[in-house]
Length: 299
Image 1 (cartoon, rainbow, N blue to C red):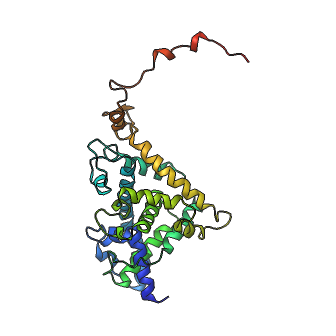
Image 2: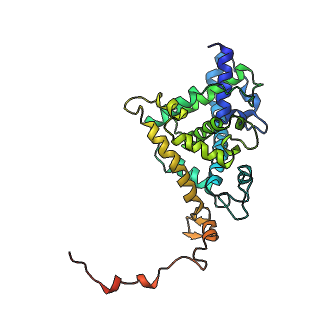
Image 3: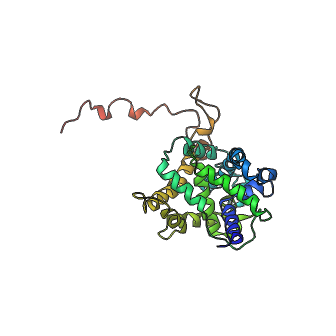
């Protein structure tokens, strides 16, 4: 493979991941000056700083992607719901704080052992083939592209804790561009957030299907005894993500004051379901005491 072909392939991969547009596209979050290739002697000193600059870019990219996932579970009167073609007059996931719930759950509560994180990071760093369409950031010189690529590799392959929200977002964005290659450009930072509702459903169908190209790509990167097991993991993740987003949309997460153990407002889920309009449930008279006066049970 020639250097020019490899550069185009890396541009395509970074665009499909959503990183190229998020970093240097219109409204990009990374200063172009940060990508100026350092002198060979200074590379080891400059790269850690660029990795530090890249972390908030990846965090915003993950948040934007999960915004698109949240409204897929519960649309509302927000731009993300409108973009997927399902605007609603009633409060939805964005008003319920579902994205914060997802990020908190993925990054802090869902275990993601190194033996899984490392191969997924390596697979993401390997990339996918060129899409053959116009991509954001193609005006980058190969050297600048290489600097961004090295920073991503360093971050994914480092010993630092990898927040699960970014690999999940990267996976959704790669699937998004498989469903609709034109999703590499448009409103929002992430390709997944640019999809229609039906296209998002198709992305999950591809993830959970038996012939997923993404699953195949990741499978070959896993060492024994994990080889061929990632397929089941990703299919589980596909279903779990929708469940997480749906659950988060109907919880009290956004309005629960953990310090005082009190709600600060009426949750969106309560409004949508008409749940206990006058306060928390204290129990029902029918369930006070033992059922039908029983005090013991015999075989």
